[in-house]
Image (cartoon, rainbow, N blue to C red):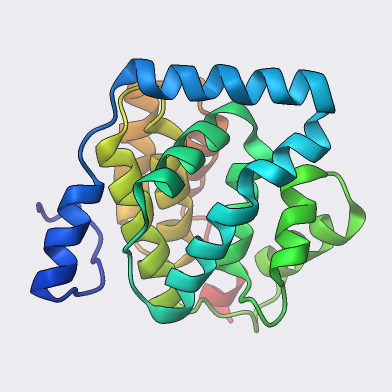
Length: 216
Protein backbone atom coordinates (compact mmCIF):
# COMPACT_ATOMS: atom_id res chain seq x y z
CA UNK A 1 0.00 0.00 0.00
CA UNK A 2 1.54 3.33 -1.02
CA UNK A 3 1.52 6.61 0.86
CA UNK A 4 -1.51 7.83 -1.07
CA UNK A 5 -3.70 4.97 0.12
CA UNK A 6 -5.94 5.95 3.03
CA UNK A 7 -5.72 4.04 6.29
CA UNK A 8 -7.95 0.97 6.48
CA UNK A 9 -9.14 -0.50 9.78
CA UNK A 10 -7.07 -3.43 11.02
CA UNK A 11 -8.30 -6.98 10.53
CA UNK A 12 -7.37 -10.26 12.12
CA UNK A 13 -5.37 -12.81 10.10
CA UNK A 14 -8.57 -14.77 9.49
CA UNK A 15 -10.43 -11.65 8.41
CA UNK A 16 -7.64 -10.68 6.01
CA UNK A 17 -7.71 -14.12 4.42
CA UNK A 18 -11.51 -13.96 4.16
CA UNK A 19 -11.35 -10.48 2.61
CA UNK A 20 -8.78 -11.60 0.06
CA UNK A 21 -11.16 -14.33 -1.09
CA UNK A 22 -13.99 -11.81 -1.39
CA UNK A 23 -12.03 -9.24 -3.35
CA UNK A 24 -11.01 -11.51 -6.21
CA UNK A 25 -11.32 -9.13 -9.19
CA UNK A 26 -14.64 -8.98 -10.95
CA UNK A 27 -14.72 -9.91 -14.61
CA UNK A 28 -15.98 -7.03 -16.75
CA UNK A 29 -18.67 -9.16 -18.37
CA UNK A 30 -19.94 -10.24 -14.94
CA UNK A 31 -20.64 -6.64 -13.93
CA UNK A 32 -22.04 -5.81 -17.36
CA UNK A 33 -24.55 -8.65 -17.01
CA UNK A 34 -25.60 -7.38 -13.58
CA UNK A 35 -25.90 -3.85 -14.98
CA UNK A 36 -28.19 -5.00 -17.75
CA UNK A 37 -30.37 -6.84 -15.21
CA UNK A 38 -30.60 -3.68 -13.12
CA UNK A 39 -31.50 -1.54 -16.15
CA UNK A 40 -34.19 -4.00 -17.18
CA UNK A 41 -35.66 -3.96 -13.68
CA UNK A 42 -35.71 -0.16 -13.59
CA UNK A 43 -37.43 -0.08 -16.96
CA UNK A 44 -40.04 -2.67 -15.99
CA UNK A 45 -40.85 -1.62 -12.41
CA UNK A 46 -39.70 1.97 -12.34
CA UNK A 47 -36.47 3.47 -11.02
CA UNK A 48 -37.78 4.16 -7.52
CA UNK A 49 -38.77 0.60 -6.67
CA UNK A 50 -35.86 -1.01 -8.50
CA UNK A 51 -33.30 1.26 -6.82
CA UNK A 52 -34.74 0.58 -3.38
CA UNK A 53 -34.75 -3.18 -3.87
CA UNK A 54 -31.25 -3.15 -5.34
CA UNK A 55 -29.67 -1.53 -2.28
CA UNK A 56 -31.85 -2.89 0.56
CA UNK A 57 -29.70 -5.88 1.58
CA UNK A 58 -26.33 -4.36 0.59
CA UNK A 59 -27.11 -1.33 2.77
CA UNK A 60 -27.68 -3.61 5.76
CA UNK A 61 -24.20 -5.05 5.36
CA UNK A 62 -22.63 -1.65 4.63
CA UNK A 63 -24.17 -0.04 7.73
CA UNK A 64 -23.23 -3.02 9.89
CA UNK A 65 -19.60 -2.67 8.81
CA UNK A 66 -19.66 1.08 9.45
CA UNK A 67 -21.02 0.55 12.95
CA UNK A 68 -18.44 -2.16 13.69
CA UNK A 69 -15.56 -0.24 12.12
CA UNK A 70 -14.57 -3.05 9.75
CA UNK A 71 -14.40 -3.47 5.98
CA UNK A 72 -15.44 -7.08 5.51
CA UNK A 73 -18.05 -6.67 2.76
CA UNK A 74 -19.31 -9.77 0.97
CA UNK A 75 -18.67 -10.21 -2.73
CA UNK A 76 -22.35 -9.88 -3.68
CA UNK A 77 -22.62 -6.59 -1.82
CA UNK A 78 -19.47 -5.26 -3.45
CA UNK A 79 -20.83 -6.11 -6.91
CA UNK A 80 -24.21 -4.55 -6.09
CA UNK A 81 -22.57 -1.27 -5.10
CA UNK A 82 -20.14 -1.23 -8.02
CA UNK A 83 -23.04 -1.65 -10.44
CA UNK A 84 -25.50 0.52 -8.51
CA UNK A 85 -23.16 3.50 -8.22
CA UNK A 86 -22.41 3.40 -11.92
CA UNK A 87 -26.04 3.05 -12.99
CA UNK A 88 -27.58 5.70 -10.73
CA UNK A 89 -25.78 8.42 -8.83
CA UNK A 90 -28.49 8.47 -6.17
CA UNK A 91 -27.08 5.18 -4.83
CA UNK A 92 -23.60 6.69 -4.76
CA UNK A 93 -24.91 9.75 -2.95
CA UNK A 94 -26.75 7.61 -0.38
CA UNK A 95 -23.40 6.05 0.54
CA UNK A 96 -21.90 9.52 0.88
CA UNK A 97 -24.74 10.52 3.17
CA UNK A 98 -24.17 7.40 5.31
CA UNK A 99 -20.58 8.52 5.90
CA UNK A 100 -21.24 12.20 6.47
CA UNK A 101 -24.21 11.72 8.83
CA UNK A 102 -24.32 8.85 11.31
CA UNK A 103 -27.16 6.34 11.46
CA UNK A 104 -28.73 7.90 14.57
CA UNK A 105 -29.46 11.06 12.57
CA UNK A 106 -29.92 9.40 9.19
CA UNK A 107 -31.36 5.86 9.54
CA UNK A 108 -31.42 3.24 6.82
CA UNK A 109 -35.00 4.19 5.87
CA UNK A 110 -33.80 7.68 4.94
CA UNK A 111 -30.85 6.32 2.97
CA UNK A 112 -33.24 4.04 1.08
CA UNK A 113 -35.44 7.02 0.35
CA UNK A 114 -32.46 9.00 -0.85
CA UNK A 115 -31.30 6.17 -3.12
CA UNK A 116 -34.78 5.84 -4.60
CA UNK A 117 -35.86 9.48 -4.63
CA UNK A 118 -32.85 11.77 -4.44
CA UNK A 119 -34.77 15.01 -4.93
CA UNK A 120 -36.72 14.85 -1.68
CA UNK A 121 -36.39 18.07 0.32
CA UNK A 122 -35.38 16.22 3.50
CA UNK A 123 -32.31 14.67 1.91
CA UNK A 124 -31.26 18.00 0.40
CA UNK A 125 -31.55 19.59 3.84
CA UNK A 126 -29.38 16.86 5.38
CA UNK A 127 -26.61 17.38 2.85
CA UNK A 128 -26.77 21.17 3.13
CA UNK A 129 -26.56 20.88 6.92
CA UNK A 130 -23.54 18.62 6.65
CA UNK A 131 -21.73 21.01 4.32
CA UNK A 132 -22.53 24.26 6.13
CA UNK A 133 -22.81 23.39 9.84
CA UNK A 134 -19.53 24.15 11.60
CA UNK A 135 -20.60 21.91 14.46
CA UNK A 136 -21.02 18.82 12.28
CA UNK A 137 -17.75 16.97 12.74
CA UNK A 138 -16.78 13.82 10.83
CA UNK A 139 -16.78 10.46 12.58
CA UNK A 140 -13.26 9.48 11.55
CA UNK A 141 -13.56 5.79 12.38
CA UNK A 142 -16.80 5.54 10.42
CA UNK A 143 -15.31 7.40 7.45
CA UNK A 144 -12.18 5.24 7.38
CA UNK A 145 -14.28 2.07 7.49
CA UNK A 146 -16.23 3.41 4.50
CA UNK A 147 -13.03 4.29 2.67
CA UNK A 148 -11.72 0.78 3.28
CA UNK A 149 -14.83 -0.82 1.80
CA UNK A 150 -14.79 1.53 -1.17
CA UNK A 151 -11.12 0.76 -1.79
CA UNK A 152 -11.93 -2.95 -1.84
CA UNK A 153 -14.74 -2.34 -4.33
CA UNK A 154 -12.58 -0.11 -6.54
CA UNK A 155 -9.62 -2.49 -6.52
CA UNK A 156 -11.85 -5.44 -7.44
CA UNK A 157 -13.71 -3.60 -10.21
CA UNK A 158 -12.58 -2.86 -13.78
CA UNK A 159 -13.06 0.50 -15.47
CA UNK A 160 -15.66 2.02 -15.53
CA UNK A 161 -17.03 0.36 -12.39
CA UNK A 162 -14.16 1.52 -10.19
CA UNK A 163 -14.66 5.22 -10.95
CA UNK A 164 -17.56 6.13 -8.65
CA UNK A 165 -16.11 4.25 -5.63
CA UNK A 166 -12.88 6.22 -6.13
CA UNK A 167 -14.87 9.45 -6.39
CA UNK A 168 -16.62 8.73 -3.09
CA UNK A 169 -13.22 8.05 -1.50
CA UNK A 170 -12.06 11.46 -2.78
CA UNK A 171 -15.17 13.08 -1.34
CA UNK A 172 -14.77 11.36 2.04
CA UNK A 173 -11.12 12.36 2.28
CA UNK A 174 -12.14 15.94 1.49
CA UNK A 175 -14.79 15.74 4.22
CA UNK A 176 -12.06 14.58 6.63
CA UNK A 177 -9.83 17.50 5.61
CA UNK A 178 -7.29 15.05 4.18
CA UNK A 179 -5.14 16.46 1.33
CA UNK A 180 -5.13 13.05 -0.39
CA UNK A 181 -8.61 13.95 -1.62
CA UNK A 182 -7.00 15.68 -4.59
CA UNK A 183 -4.94 12.58 -5.42
CA UNK A 184 -8.00 10.36 -5.60
CA UNK A 185 -10.03 12.97 -7.47
CA UNK A 186 -7.27 13.23 -10.07
CA UNK A 187 -7.09 9.44 -10.31
CA UNK A 188 -10.81 9.43 -11.15
CA UNK A 189 -10.47 12.19 -13.72
CA UNK A 190 -7.65 10.36 -15.49
CA UNK A 191 -10.04 7.42 -15.88
CA UNK A 192 -13.08 9.55 -16.71
CA UNK A 193 -12.74 13.27 -17.31
CA UNK A 194 -16.54 13.61 -17.07
CA UNK A 195 -16.78 12.41 -13.45
CA UNK A 196 -18.48 15.48 -11.98
CA UNK A 197 -17.96 14.54 -8.31
CA UNK A 198 -14.23 14.06 -8.83
CA UNK A 199 -14.03 17.37 -10.73
CA UNK A 200 -15.85 19.13 -7.89
CA UNK A 201 -13.54 17.70 -5.24
CA UNK A 202 -10.40 18.40 -7.28
CA UNK A 203 -11.51 22.00 -7.80
CA UNK A 204 -12.42 22.47 -4.12
CA UNK A 205 -9.14 20.99 -2.91
CA UNK A 206 -7.15 23.01 -5.43
CA UNK A 207 -8.81 26.24 -4.25
CA UNK A 208 -8.49 25.37 -0.59
CA UNK A 209 -12.25 25.05 -0.08
CA UNK A 210 -12.96 22.88 2.97
CA UNK A 211 -16.05 21.66 4.87
CA UNK A 212 -17.45 24.17 7.35
CA UNK A 213 -16.20 22.22 10.38
CA UNK A 214 -12.57 22.75 9.31
CA UNK A 215 -12.88 26.47 9.97
CA UNK A 216 -15.12 26.12 13.02
